[in-house]
Image (tube, rainbow, N blue to C red; front, side, top):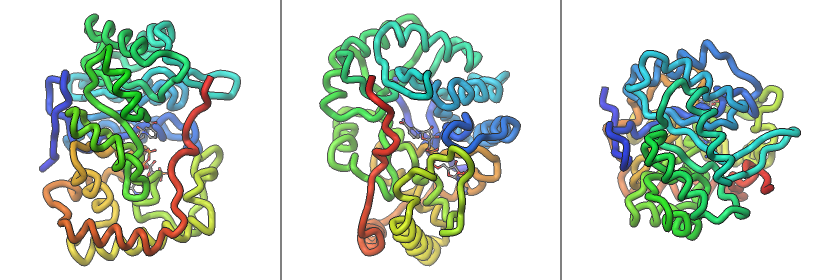
Length: 327
Ligand code: NAP
């Protein structure tokens, strides 16, 4: 195995540069899920040297964390658990809540569900404009002093919000959306992270499966699957994105003998202090992890990829549809 690793300040062990994303393992917004397959997926990731497991309380309203806790029983110390805080749910909705009181409640719930007494990386899930960022940050620093968390991160924050947050906490990581099709952070968050020594946990690495190369115009999604609402998966845009995937697949195969999935992950790893969060819920989906490691895209590859994207995706759209409500 040739898993590439990095360091996240505060976490004592090297962290794999691919992290397993467990949103779908919660079932909610992914048309349901199979817990036995989920447990097997998490253990398969660990066996392949992928030690970073990203989850959140809101994924299945506790379910994803519970499944992660179950899967890691007896092997907790091998894993780097990244979970999140500061979304609340009820009445059919999800809202932001970064108050110290909410954080105090959530940390205990997460530790219980994860069957552990510490969380490696604790991330504020979405910025909450109703609570001063320094107040949220100070509460997380207290959790760190108490040994309940080892490192602090934020997700979906702008550089301005990270600056305000950093007045009261040592930030180690940021988790933004980032993949070949969703690149807004190149203008702000990515340079900020480079400058401030933050790890960038790129979420939606496969653009919700689009970049797996396994989706076609006839693919359908069950139940509450978010791709039924995702604007990239609606025609006529869907055809544009699929055409781009086909073109990327040819480039990956002809120049590197790789799949488009491996190219999508490699591209993220070649952008800086990045970790690619790859969502999977069945062990077979993790086949090929090693194809993403041990090679690099050249400057010409990257320029040609940009040209292919511009040629095929003439009406791009971002991931904004995923943002939860304000309070
Ligand atoms: P993703 O990684 O872009 O795509 C995941 C989906 O792609 C899987 O559920 C699976 O869909 C499909 N897939 C994966 N491997 C495949 C393979 N080998 N062949 C075919 N299809 C494959 O999307 P994501 O799960 O949304 O993002 C990754 C992680 O980032 C999440 O799990 C979560 O941990 C994190 N995240 C964080 C935020 C945030 O606000 N901080 C937001 C979104 C995501 P099917 O199982 O349906 O085939």
